[in-house]
Length: 251
Image (cartoon, rainbow, N blue to C red):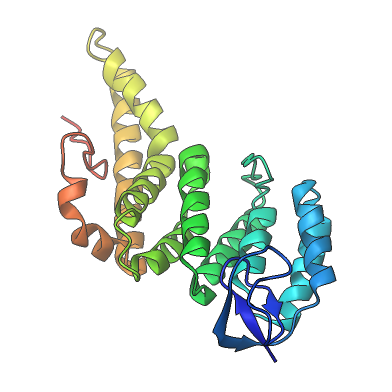
């Protein structure tokens, strides 16, 4: 058995107060399974070189020895999301499995973390991820993202409120965006041109848009997102952040 590094999550022998791996203080109050430091070095070397596939292999080896290693979960999550040393965020929107697993890894990093540094790192990753990749938040990813953010919320970090709002707004906007663009075209065009055929098409698009709004509402009710929105309703009702889940009047 060994103690746990406050910073990186690596193990250290019981008589060591400073982590041989990252140089940080060791938490002598926590005992975990011993971790092969050489594996940690190989994993991080691959990560620092943006060799994500190799890094994941070795982070998995670390997690086989200690599933509660928050640093390994954090680094594996960044690898799954293709977030390299220079914080280059380039996830493949079609690869929902890697995206979902990456976010779940970040969530596990939060679940097993007893370090404020690890929590701050995860918060930073989630913030950047939402800022740069809000266009890929959809039915497949929104609940995972909210779950990860909510794990931070449990430690009363006030920075999570804008993250939650940003994620839900991006989700709603992305689902509606394509149909919204089509709808705006007909609404703007019909202001100056009276065309019965276009009027019929416009009403059809309005009906399809309203159906999407209803679908999102139903999903949010079933998934619990509506309860989260209710908790933060004051943030969702401001002029700078209007609700976009409004049906369009055909008239």
